[in-house]
Length: 107
Length: 190
Image 1 (cartoon, rainbow over the protein chains, first blue to last red):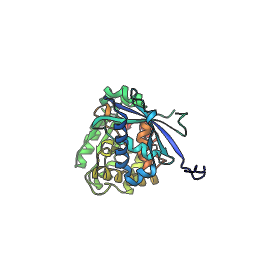
Image 2: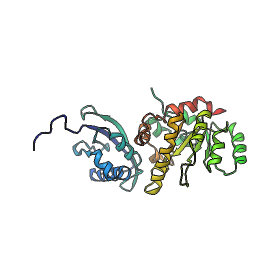
Image 3: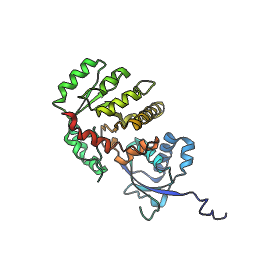
Image 4: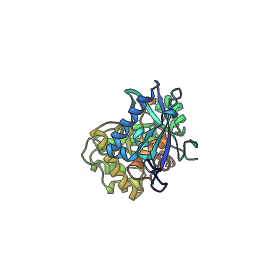
């Protein structure tokens, strides 16, 4: 596949999040929760437009922190969706968005 | 530095102070005391608000019919009108009520728990909030989302709560700080 030129490339932002809960969650469960949260608030269309991706090798299981890549101008919608989630995989807990940055390096 | 206030994080919830401060909320509200009045009778609301004014810093009143809500936002002793539109098909107040609330520095409050429900309840809550924000944006009225946490898992970071308002299309609203400061500056009307 050819490289997409910069003018046509989607611009993204990186959201660093932390999970506050009495339990520790596996990466797969966190992904499912984020998917659930985004679809509930934004719907299939909105979630598709946000074009988010949870980066696996940036997920710290011990600290329960991770990074989500999301399309620019949709980071606030995704943040709101995570805020309105009141449980994680059936257990009490919530997401806190720590930082939003244009690059992973600056997170 | 911006300070974030939530008028449900008061002395009655002192046990959550550490976690709330860690998330970024100001400690100042934990020195305040609050009370909520729930009644359909205007006379009773007015009487109770006057009595409790001397004991409490923040007085919240649960919203009722639109006519009652109009009287509430014109009452000097009341700080916050809570959850207009709850259990109704409309937002529970009109633009005139919102304008009056702006003039009298009475905030319109929404419980965060309404927004974390799923399905129809959340849709109605977000719809009511959006309509109120539309009027409040025109008249510069204070709108607050109150966490009213039962435990630490009901807490959220201030910027995350702000993102909910921004996602509805009102990025100019910083209701967790500037509007709340206006009410703090009102000194609780004591």
